Image (tube, rainbow, N blue to C red; front, side):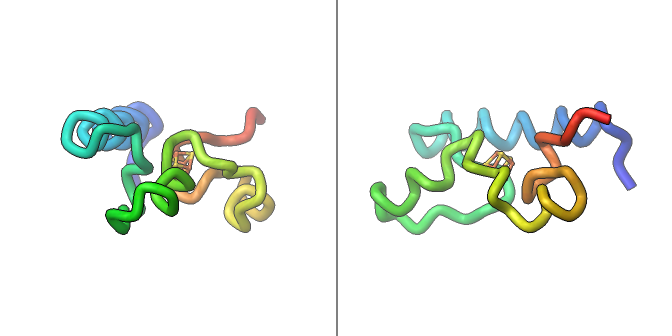
Length: 69
Ligand code: SF4
């Protein structure tokens, strides 16, 4: 299991890498389709409060955003 700092660092780097390579700050743990319209839903931060992981565990799909304890 990652500690919080390592997790945030790795996920943030993924977002920045997507920005550099794909032109937008896409989610680091989801794969873009190449369809710009569809991929806009993958820009970070997404609408994570509707995700099951947020409702059940208080985290976005990737765990970059977590509910305050
Ligand atoms: S908020 Fe979380 S799930 Fe949503 S795009 Fe960012 S890292 Fe991915």
